[in-house]
Each structure stands twice: as C-alpha cells, then as structure tokens.
Amino acid sequence: MEVFFTFIPKEHQQQQLIAEFPDVEFYFEYKGKSRLPTADIVVTFGEDLSDEDIQQAKKLKWIMVASAGVEKMPHAAILEKGIVVSNVRGIHKTPMTESVLAHLLALKRSLPFIYEQQRKEEWSRKSGSTELSGSTALIIGPGAIGAEIGRLLQAFGVHTIGCNRSGKSADTMEEMVAFGQLIDVLPKVDVVISVLPSTKETKHMLTAEHFQAMKNEAIFMNFGRGDLVEEKVLIEALEKEEIAYAVLDVFEQEPLPKGHPFWSMPNVVVSPHVSSHSEKYVERALEVFVANLKKWLAEDPHPSNLVNMERGY
Amino acid sequence: MEVFFTFIPKEHQQQQLIAEFPDVEFYFEYKGKSRLPTADIVVTFGEDLSDEDIQQAKKLKWIMVASAGVEKMPHAAILEKGIVVSNVRGIHKTPMTESVLAHLLALKRSLPFIYEQQRKEEWSRKSGSTELSGSTALIIGPGAIGAEIGRLLQAFGVHTIGCNRSGKSADTMEEMVAFGQLIDVLPKVDVVISVLPSTKETKHMLTAEHFQAMKNEAIFMNFGRGDLVEEKVLIEALEKEEIAYAVLDVFEQEPLPKGHPFWSMPNVVVSPHVSSHSEKYVERALEVFVANLKKWLAEDPHPSNLVNMERGY
Image (cartoon, rainbow over the protein chains, first blue to last red):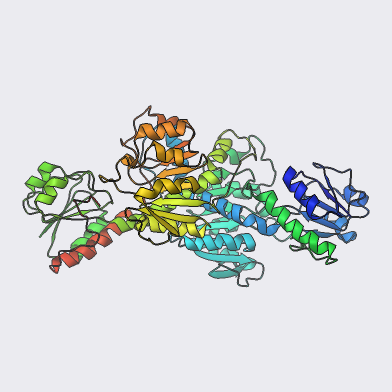
C-alpha cells in the first residue's frame, strides 16, 4: 500500500508514521505528482490536484485533505471514480475561534487605536472602547467551528443566534434561524460571523439587502469563504457605512491583489487567510490521519470527517 | 445634606439622582473645589483631592471614589479625620477582562503582524500564529477583576494559577501561591498578569530575578499599577529578551513621556491606561453610588467596597 503526501511533515512526524505503519510505503513530495499513478491514498492540502491528476491516479481510493475546504478539488472526476474524500474539519476550531475572538475583542477594546497611538508616541485616552459583553452575535454555519465560537461568545456574555440551512437547533446557539430567515434577525445583531463553506447554496448568499438590514454599528466577520458575498456589494455597504466594520479572513481572489480597495479602507481588517494557522496544525491533522489509516487498513472504508463531494462539504 | 461631584455625569444621570433623592442637594463641578467646605459627601475619580482640600472639608464624612485606585489621595489627612472612603472596584471587571483577553489573543493570533501587513498592502501568510489554549497563566492579585480574568482564561483552556498575599484559595484559580512563592511558579508560566493595586507591599515587588525566572516566551501584562516593577528592571528584561512581550496599561509616570523607550520597543505594547474604559462606566459607578447613598441616608454608614486607607485598598 502506498501513501503519497503532497506536503512535507516534519522529520520526526514522518518517522512516527513509518514506525507506526511498517507495511505501508510513505512518500513525501511538496506539491508532488510523481507517485500519483501508484498511490492508494493521497494526503494533500487540497489545492494541488487537477482533473488530469485524478485521471492519472489509477489506484487512488482515498484522498485525505489536511484542511477544511475542498472547493478547489476536481469534484466531477473524484465523484466519477468513486474516490473517498475526508478532511480535518474538527482541527480548525481552536485557532479559528481564537482568531475570531481576537479580532472582535481588538475592535471593542480599541487595539488598532492603541497600536496607532504607540507608533506616533502619543498618549491619548480617548479610546472610545466599548464592551463585547451584552452583545448579540449571529453565527452563520454553526458546525464544529461555529459551536466553539458560540461557546466562547457565551462565556463573554454574548447572546448567540445560529443560522443554518434547516434552522434546526445547534450546540451553543440560544436561538436558531434557517438561511431563509436570515434577514429577519439581522436588525437585532451586533456581530455577524460566517464560517460557511463554499457551496452552490452559499455562493453570494449575502446580498445588499442583508447589509442594509444590519445595524450601522454591526461588525461583519467572514472567516468562511470569500464568495459568500460579492465584493462590490460588501464595498458598497462599507462605503455607505451601513455597517461599522468588516473583518475578512477570506476573499474572492486570494492573495488579495495590491491596490485592492479593502487594503486601505478604514473600516476593513484584511487578514490574509491565516485564522486557522497554529503551531499545532500538522500534528493534529496527522492524528486524524493516523486514526483513519488504522480504520482503512482494518478494511473499514469510512474515515471520519467524510466529505460529500456532491454537496461540497 | 450636600453631595458634591468633582466630575460631570450626563444630564439625564444628574436628573435621575435629583429625582431619586429629593432631600439631597447635588452639586456637579469638574475638578471643582467650591463646595468642599459644606459637602457631606464627595464623589470623585480620586485624583483631585489634596491634603489642603481635606482640611477645608469641615463636614465631609464620606468620599466615594468612582475608580479603583486611591493611591493619589491624601491618606493621612483622611485617616485623621475619620472620613469613610469607598470605591467601585467591582465595575471594572468586564472591560478590564475584555482588554486583557484582547491583548493576549491579539499577540497569540498575530494581530500586530496582520495590521502591519495591511498597512503595507502585503499578503503574507507567515503569521507564526500560536494558540492561547493549553497555556498556563499566573494572575497576581485575584480579586474581582482577577477572578473574571481567570474565568475567561479557563474557558479558553488555560490553566490558572493565582497569587495573593496569603496563598489562600481564590475563585477561578486552579492553584494558588503566596507572594513569597511567586518565583517558584514563574518557570512554568506562559502569561503573567498583574491586577494588583499600589501598596507599600506591591511597590517594586517584581525584581530582576522574577523576570529571569520567567520563560523566554512569556508575556507579561501589567494592568494593575505602574510601580509593581521598576522601569529599568523591566526594560533590561525586555532588552535581554528574558521574556517575549510586555503589555503595559500602567506606568510609573503617566502620561508616558514622548521619547520613552517603551514607545518604540518592538516587544512592548503601550496601552494608555484605558483598559477599564467602557461606555457603561459612569452608569455603573452611579448604580454603586445610589445603592450606597440609600444606605447612608438610612444611617448605615457602611457603603459597599469600603477602602481601608491604612492598607491602601
């Protein structure tokens, strides 16, 4: 059995794998293609496989994606060949939640102002700081990450409203609405946080009407995928000050090009898609992989975190 | 009975007081002195009363300080005249805790880097972000504010160690040490947070040895009073990189003068003593005052949050 990694874990992590699975041949090649024709399993960050690669991969049965998003993968080819796809969605929840809370608290507690004053060596106490406590937050897409965000928001005294397709109850959400009712709750919400994946249904799901329905003081945070809202819609809402801030970790085009208006808008924070970063990332991804590989070798072809490639998540 | 405010609450707040206590005469004068000779009660932010003012205040029985620190008050004169002093220590806990968490998460999740990249319009994902989860924090002075900080740190998966005079157990602290044992726990701590008041005992309590005992990766946060550590000791620890960061909301000299090394040190965050700021501050202080004034008029001379002027907190 051949396992082909298209990224390079640390040396000791490679050695652990080799020691734990003596009957498996492991190959590691950064953005590599050489072992695709013979690999049974491919472990990838999900951005380096083309339709052609899948055609070439005659023996491939399982793609383990060491990230959350699969939208850059060749869905049709994978579906056609019946290749199992799994991801590591659980492992992002701690760093992503910490990033969401960091950005939110930073705005409430005036950190951009404080840093700017320090650069100018100016002592001003006119921070205008406000409190997160007592706010209402809407979490769009309350899966594992959304639930963790909700849990910590509640600890800060925030009222949590979740929004998913069905409107069915979700962990750590005090209220729930379905996608279709989104616009009804926006007027009472102080913070709108999306952690939605990119699917046919979520693409451009937020429209100008949604931003018009939000409070002028609202903070919009997109930590899901950049195509949730058309850029021009969001830019217009920000220029008209229909909302107070946008904190964006994801964009329609990444990297965000030089000269893009988001870079210099005073009510936008550009985070270069780093909210899931953590020193513990690869370690945790390998833990998920090792557990699944054991199952696989025991002929249980159901890795955890299976991705439905038709649905897209 | 005369109540003299040396700051000006909002008009509607003044009207509420006057309506609620028809038999009390209220005077409001910013940093005022005019009513000191006749006032029975003074409500102050605690920085505008001199020894002479106290001598002049022949009828003064109670000073309500609408902040936490009393170190700028004329202690000897107040003690000699037997004037009751109370403060509002409880009301800082929400904004201060949010500020502590904001700064801590900002450093862990690379917000200074993200803001700096945005200013340069540069997309770099080399954030080097780490996680707060799994850290160990030492909270020096776990009173109302420290307990709230501990509660939220625990929600983020942080192990909490409290440090007070006696080492007696305190809310939301998983371990406790006495002041004298401080140096023993520092080597295992990732974040050191002080919310201590300024007293004879806490002045210059942290020494060079304490910083040498901390991890090189440690973040030191002073949100108590600036004289906890001599500036030159802290500067030396930072220059030698004995710790990774200092986040300072308080200083030996405030405002921090232009040209002071702290302003430009890359491992220092200068917060201009704004961590307790909140749009809800005066409202909450007045709630404490109203409850105490009712007690006072009912001849119960024991306002909540009494300050022992000999001890200093």
